[in-house]
Image (tube, rainbow, N blue to C red; front, side):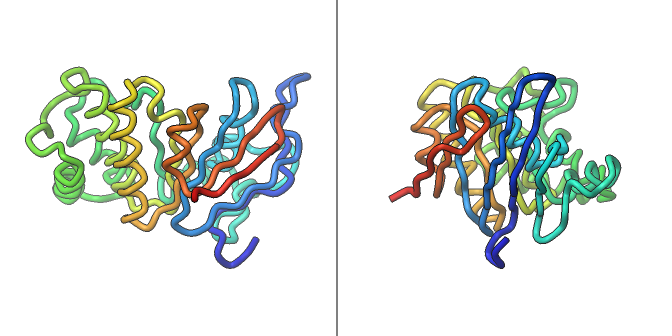
Length: 227
């Protein structure tokens, strides 16, 4: 792993029964870089994200975050690493439906020990910066799809993560709203100094990222840098 790399995977292999989801994948993510992982359904791209994020442990190979071997950590330490160093944005947001937007955003900071007052103040700032001032008290069901994804972006960034993982973040949105969410996701992660991994099958979503790789049958079969 080069000194400029923040996250690195080497020789990643992952099987589920007789199915090989990853068949020896190498990938690097530089500091502040945005990377799109593309491929059809069943190609292994989501498994790659889960291994890089420490959700799954590869059967072979290694994942390193800033020189730290993620796979060598126990379940508890990997869970702590995900809370302290990673942020997540999912296709359907996965916000807590019973909590207002400000509490959804504040919760990760509170789980790391921030006081309710400080976490709420930080959440208010994030929501305001993402164009959601005045909507802090709305629950997810009272927000549009695009607004809910902005809340999810704020939640992912409030703890100051090193890497943000976004799994099909525009999959449930129309094209115009998806365009807006990707712009916000890329711009805010870059401004926060975080790196970004986006799993998508949409070329227009991948176009927002600095670089893309294509995964098929558990292998990286192509890569491109945004011009």
